[in-house]
Length: 181
Image (tube, rainbow, N blue to C red; front, top):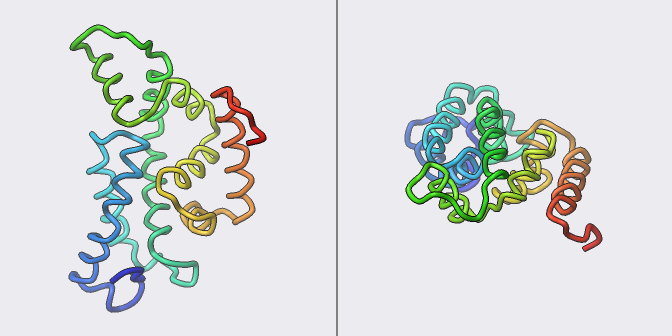
């Protein structure tokens, strides 16, 4: 079923769709969890496949494989939760290295450490325009190619490159890194 196209008649059967789900759910889940946290990742990732099942007729196999289409759906669902995401990044950016034990803030600090995010990175991500943040996270977290990101977000290949370049430059600058390297 690897690389199956949902628009193909064989992929419309329950077993074929289940195989598609099994193949792509972990990557969609990881992407959503990186954007919104693991607490909502199951629901959002599952919603991605519910929407894909309902809108399978809207998938155009001429535009490429189903994987970027699914990431596009997931990215739009993440956008619906953008306020939550922005509050989360802003809160992470304000955290200090020492927090009160057993507090909500301490749980957030532990989550940040577990996720590998640092407050400056969270602040830099929060400061990016949504389009740049989406492209950067689809590239960095989900390892989608420029072509796949183009399909996922419905933007041109060149726009992906320019948004990614701008986002990387802004994040490097916010982290105090050399932009030439």
